[in-house]
Length: 340
Image 1 (cartoon, rainbow, N blue to C red):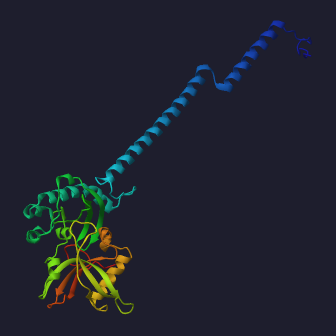
Image 2 (image 1 turned 45 degrees about the vertical axis):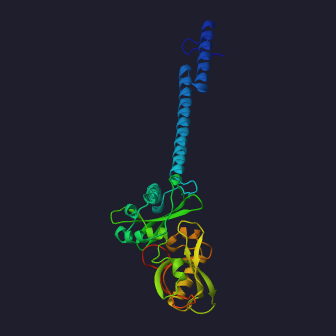
Image 3 (image 1 turned 180 degrees about the vertical axis):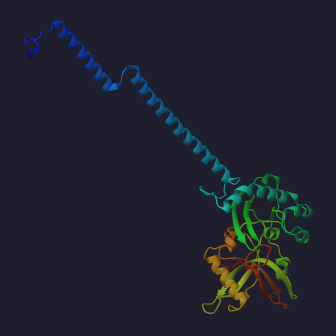
């Protein structure tokens, strides 16, 4: 019930049409407010919804694009590191080590030099590819054994590509497969001008004298040889364990094939030679290559590489003595290679 008017004391009167107008206006405002709370007004709501969908679509496109780029880069890295050799080692991903960077940067150049060296044939043409060319040329000219090479082998695969640490600095150790179970072991050292050159003496297993003819002689003679050695007899006490060995000539370029063998060569296990042999065989049995070499694992089981001075004693019976072990490897420098 409306209150009395404070001035006249009568009840106030309201036109029914005014009540209807107020109710209609209030309802319209109420519905408009509800629509604004639920989704915003008209075009403004649709605009904001479309903007969100557009941003989501752009973000997805960027995400997909980034993954495509990553996959392309990874595929290119795999192809690059595989190099030219299908049977070659796989180099890991991640941050490349110094050794991996050397291999990645120099492997194809090493391959080119090996092929061109073999194709050159004559020593005077080959000498530009080898380390210490002046000292090596004389030996190359007198060396009778060679690695045959044909035009069909101009794209050899590598089975080993490795960096080793030597007293002469880092070296790139490679092994290349040729036809007919033949292989070429090419180890590269840097010359004074930063060029990687082949260690020729190691490649051909150079010796001062022909090992096969040396074994057949009867007069006293001594020479320096690159040989394989296997233990013949051992002892369980003393400073060393090797009491005798058999010395075997390697076959240049022929994987796993051996040349002529000496009769049993007796050594004193407690002598310097006996101790060196014992340590070298122990290193081989532990699976450790000299300077980290991997190429020596291709040698016949249980054998080690030696560069040694061997004397043939005079007489009808073949008797040989190891006068000195210069190295437990075939590289062209004097160092046993047994340092830890």
